[in-house]
Length: 452
Image (cartoon, rainbow, N blue to C red; front, side):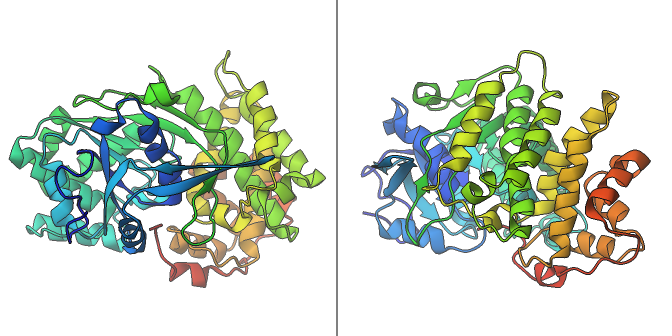
């Protein structure tokens, strides 16, 4: 039984103590899965919100909020029913968001909104070039009670919590951003500072931001299906002042310093995925399993891995992890499409390729493999992809410049753009000469800017 607003009738299901923003397949295969498998799951119901379209919330409500999860191994499938989500809402339902966050029972907010979904610039501040971010800042300063952006909505929810004196809360971003807890903390507090300095001070005192590394390949599937791989990993670092589920009993790890784990996953898995996508699409390949089977694509990945692991702290296990990754990528029954990986590519290149290249330069080495990966991105960009990218306007300006290679590198790393050896290596790999680069970003400009 549910109320008309999508919330469960009181007493019929477990209490809402977690709010999640970004109701997608990965959340349902990962954070919701861990909560379902926690031994105290009965005490930790999740109220989930979409970001853009209300469709996923309506579908989940229509099936009573529980849903089947198919775990697809090389040798067969297993299926279980996940029932940790107890309410689902359109992201624009801010009355529900405020109501949940004003409750002292709610102790955790998790997010999966993609790298570009936070509306933050490279330094972690609100991206004032984003029209929706600027609109939310202007309207919230004027006392509005609605918002379009994730951070604008989160600010409204936190303000409701402050006014209700509901106590401390943990915010747990689960997107592939280095040091994502600190990154989102900067964005939230700076956003709040520009709206209400009193709210910003309250956030600093009452809100904990937890950094995470998340890992479970969950590709797009047929309508209504959630399909994932057997492997799963979740590493968290930070405080939960209002409590949390016993996720560690389901396999999550809590650490003091997440950086090594985060970078291992971000560079080795996500970086490899991007290489396979950019290089594989150019070859007419469609899936990760197709691309990892291609000798040239596999060699690009192996070279990048060798460069990336040299940037990890001594003692960070990576040999077995890389073997596992090859086996996971090669699983033909997980149909992970390269076109899915290539969406929102710019932020992915920044945090995966550019990050490794900068660290390699710091160590006095030439980041040759990172240059090859960056060149694959530029070549892919030149093939006129139609996928949306939140930074499409920056890319369009760069590709129209007199030297598009250097301009595109500057979009993901101004520092790398100033390195003549690096830019020369990228240019040699792309074969692109100075002069405007023909591209298909006009379609991306008008595409949806963030995932639902």
